[in-house]
Length: 299
Ligand code: R5P
Image (cartoon, rainbow, N blue to C red; front, side):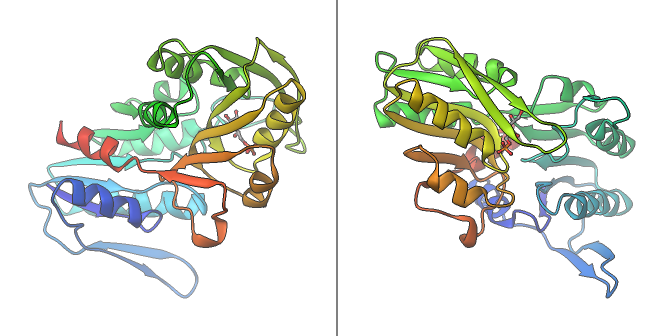
């Protein structure tokens, strides 16, 4: 077996390889003066089971092209099997037509990946159940909810005083899974609105009763707007301490500053997306998905 890493999250790929007692195989990404890229596998893959790890976070288009070129290089060099591990799967939010005239971005990406006839695709906490259906190839979806449940138990926040809150109705499935893992911890949901033209978020109402301790659970944090408005509303409704658990630290624009200022005590994310030092902030805690991935690769 050989493991290759794209450039988007080598830090995580190295951790995964270490857990498998392996080293990353060589992959050269050459950038031409005009920005085009060429990928070259530096180890023999003929007849080998191969894995490529690449999160398709910002810069999303570049990271996707790099993933496609790496898969192509593995195929051309005779790899027996190819597993793509895409811990954060870019373009997944546009999983259907929201307004007339729009594309379905995730379907386009799925069709490209299907053409490569991958043996499997491994992703973590996909935005919706629809996404798996966009592919013809086998998709294994892992979830950070087990990691979050362990951390919440370590914090000692129990179901007597804590409520799990989804910042929108789309996150209800995740919240129910986490609630079960925590012995049926109570949960509530916020009615969130996003202006599709500006991206601005507003939160009017919490459906359900909340305790003094609140845990907001989301699949990703991009601008930080969802978390900031959800926390403000929850505080108004009587929440004392608020922690956030979100799988993907997309952290676009001013997210780190917004999250540091938001009415939350701590923000837990995972390392599906690499967070550079300039995007880290005092309230941030990063949990690793390396074991989740390596355990799956052992199967
Ligand atoms: C939306 O449906 C997602 O689950 C997240 O709540 C959203 O993508 C977060 O985005 P932002 O941080 O920009 O509000």
